[in-house]
Length: 41
Image 1 (cartoon, rainbow, N blue to C red):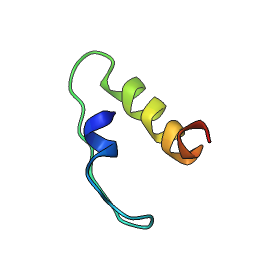
Image 2 (image 1 turned 180 degrees about the vertical axis):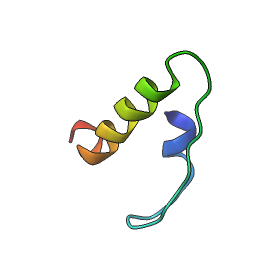
Image 3 (image 1 turned 45 degrees about the horizontal axis):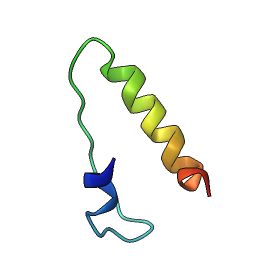
Image 4 (image 1 turned 45 degrees about the vertical axis):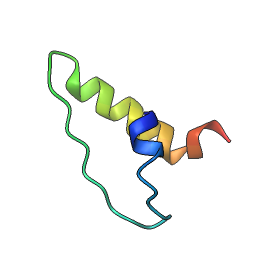
């Protein structure tokens, strides 16, 4: 998460995040929800 936050992208930019492993889809879904909620702010 810190790596994503420190990318310095502006709102509206598109980034691609790739996850691997047994729970990759679950992790990506959770991350997408976190972004949609503006990281809980």
